[in-house]
Image (tube, rainbow, N blue to C red):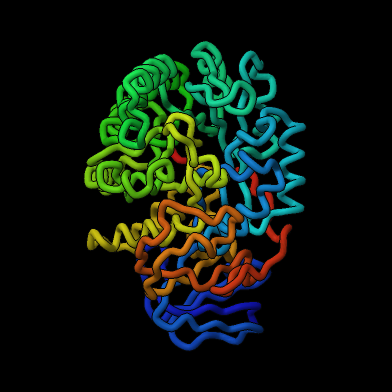
Length: 454
């Protein structure tokens, strides 16, 4: 038999790295895995000592928050260059969020036209909207829902009241679909921001205090309790302190469906150390907290972190140039840096970086969003989504990024690995220099039958 493609090197399999191993591909799927001499194929790539890992599943991106649905093109181009073959995109699109079957159809059409990588989708509800649209969106293939307890925009990113959150949980309780939350208490945050402004504290050093852990934890606890009351799956999409993950774990121990997610920037930056250099370039919500990096790594190693994502935001850097930190936009680009940043951070801690990277960035998000076993692992029958990771170090230069944003808080940071190839469905998509697949090569990915609690 002659395969379409054979890639060989050190392959990171579900049970760990395997040297001198090859992966054979037919019809876009992994057809065989072996050691020793590679079988015949139309195309053969020998990665030498480089790592071959599953394509990353980035479980939290905002492709369309600035440029609308066409933003899928540049976002997924950046994803492919970073070894990310599937993004799970949030519903807060510009100018209107994905809250109906009509909006879902529009976004699927945009994926078909623009996507360089595969795309799975969150849905949402708007204030006052009934739960009548929940089931059609699930049948349409959304992998999760998300709401917010804090209003960033009355139309695109509104606050959902507690009674409506409970109603949504009740609509989801007999499904495998998680409801995620942007977890900040609005009254606390607005009062603390007003106090900071009144005392002329306008720099990045005031950001964390103006949206204190108490605001994050209060919203988290209420959301978890509403999820528990309904029996649905409550998911916190970004936690910034160990206390948050421990709250989630308490509900899990009590038999409720609860999970918490971590974003990679919380593992890299500290406002006390990096604030003077980065300023608003490191502004995200909830804020990056001082002195939390070591403790958050402990949460990963404890198993309390469901998975790690980028929370990539497609905002241009211009919205960071404001006199006050409170007027600067929140969010940072992160798709192209997710894989090398997480791997480097794990390697710097002398962990088994290859194994924990595949676990946190590939396997666990694929299982969480119902994409397993199609995504998330190098195994027979899975999509042939692969990333080749060289141990060649690099200094990240955001001016060369493929997201049209060309800025990053990681600019100038040293990574110990470089993504040198990305395959999507067995087709070369990134050759280490350029994205070589075309818009529309990526597909809309529906939720499958797997789920986090099976």
